[in-house]
View 1 (cartoon, one colour):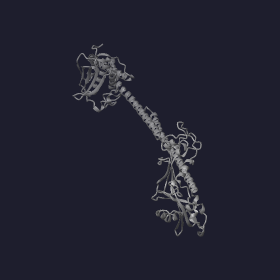
View 2 (cartoon, helix red, strand yellow):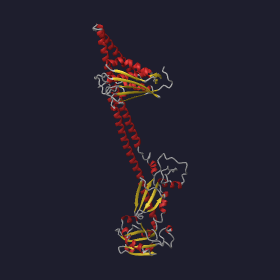
View 3 (cartoon, helix red, strand yellow):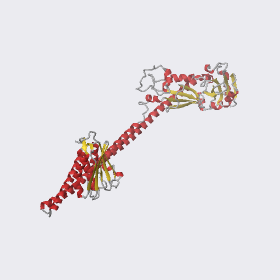
Length: 569
């Protein structure tokens, strides 16, 4: 393992594990929610089915009570043909007819249909020919159905020109359950006369009392039936408290349709029929009607403890997204740590390389002087110059390392004579430049007074000159220029080196970055020079930039703010 050891691998594995565990937890949570929601919805639909079944049962009982007119023929008991009673055995007014209309406009006919001859005997009035044909053609087959024989009565809805009405009929059978005759009469039960449906809807408790937790809405009276009917299709909270269970109008919509799916009765009027929680039950005895019960969506929370579980998908996805973001942040931090470790190793290697060369040079020439192996005064002077040059190089390197180690730059801001600083830096760097047969030229126009820190400007120049000397060819000319341009004092350094590619000009300001440099090339360097330059420029509120010279080298530019007061301190 490298210097950073197994810690990054363990941290990466832990972050990956967090994401995997979060994903599994989200999946399990979603699965549990789906299962619980499906179970709750099944329960509520079962309630709706039970309600529709209960309504059809009550409707059958009400209809059977209304069919007492057939008691004289004793439906279900065996008859012999010769003993069959006449049609007049049925009462002249077999059933309540108030809702069918005035008697003169709705005269009641009674009939006896003998089978298999299909001879019809009428009492009272005679129906329209269309109705008579229905009685002769349809009633025999309907009366032979097992459920009609078993119940002893049935109703058939018809549509004559005068409006919808009903044919009530009952079969007289022999001991073999063969239909001998069918008795019947005119009625409007179930189409115009829907009083039983209304009564059934009001009084029948089709659902159990609510589970604990139902909260009374004190802003509305429990007896405010009109409001409950008006709100039956809304999603608002239901108001009121009923010890024996909430009334049907607050729970559901009851819709009764015929065989052609035409609505016969609906309560409350305009109630919702598209609920996901519904139950359907047929009632063949009464015109082939179908009872559809649609529960209000907000009823579910009263029928099932806790109601229908809401989907936790957004929260689950948020948890998963948070885990992924945490993992990404952790991996980014881990990557930064690894890069920092690599940078530190590279920095130590570069600094060691930079220190080794001048120290070896100094050691060699000190030993030559100590052993007296210099043959002439010129050789002795040259040795001292090399020692001085390498010492300056070590000082510059140590200054760069110290500047890079400071957590933040704390500079004094005052007037700076840039021309004077340029001259000082040039004098300091001249020995190193002459050792490489390089020449430094100054293009300075005085006065050039800027606002900044003299030491920082000098350090910037030395670092830039050091880079120019390292990467430039032997014998090149390095030009340092200064111009005062209104509110800006511009300082630039031109070299004759290979230049810096445009794609790498943003990277050279980063610590430890070297353009094409390796630990073994002759340029050396720790990759800190321009990074320190940038930090010093930012600390002085100045701007540092790199561009290309007309001759193909690199131009470094430092734009300082001009000092408005004039003189330098």
